[in-house]
Amino acid sequence: MNDGIAFNRAADRVRDLGLQHRYSGGALRVQGICHDGDAPGTVAIRRGNNGGVVIHCHKCDGNTGFLEAIGWTEADLFDEPLPDRGHDRPTDDLWLPCTQQGHKRVAQYRYCDELGNVVHGVTRCDHKCFAQWRPDPGTRSGRRWRLTDDQGNRLVRLVPYRLPELLTAKRADRVIWIAEGEKDVHALVDHGLVATCNAQGAGKWTAEHARYLADADVTIVADRDAKGREHATSVVDTLHGVARSVYVVQALTGKDAYDHFAAGHKDGDFRQVWAPVPHPEDPGAAA
Image (cartoon, rainbow, N blue to C red):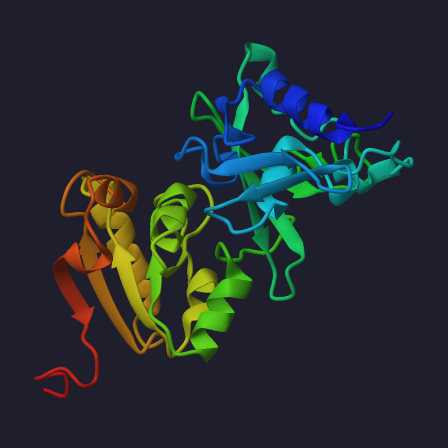
């Protein structure tokens, strides 16, 4: 009697959110809004062999990000009625400050601490509005849409994006890439690189972000405009005496890392524009 209930709920959710989708190969193929929705059909939604629904994003290699993006939890994958979860999944999770203008959320970026706990987040809508929020279990949506108090004092820590992944990469002695925004970070990550950024775009990187990159080899992708160069220069300044090496590159095509990869280029194709802090092994580094 319950056959297909969870699958039908998932299909209804996809339709209600206005996501691109199609049926192919026995599955509902949906755009990957867990990674900016830049690749249509990367999420497969199928009926489970023993009931329920199976959801898998082939770019994320899992379902966590997609479930968060549509406001679901693992409990929603089952056909049986779900228990009351209270604040485990806010009923208004997809609401944005610009929702009343007809805008829809297309991406959500969570900034976490060293242990993976959410410090604050950023949501982006289909009109490129960016809204900052911090967790607050006492509200209906589970969040407050500001990071400061009435006096302008910051209420949350400053942490770089994807901090847990960044720290793991440092321990593995991998190069860490810094981009200007989250969309560019995900473009880099999708190509096997370790990447981070600060929230709120150009000009917001601080020494507090830089301290997590102590003794790391860093490559900064500067956007190809005046603000991009200013931002990259500011990031470099905070890394002097902190990082082991710093290189600055720019997209071979387009403005940023996303454009670079969208044009079919690889990570080795970025143009090195200047190297303020050369690697210790480079010729002339000790001069």
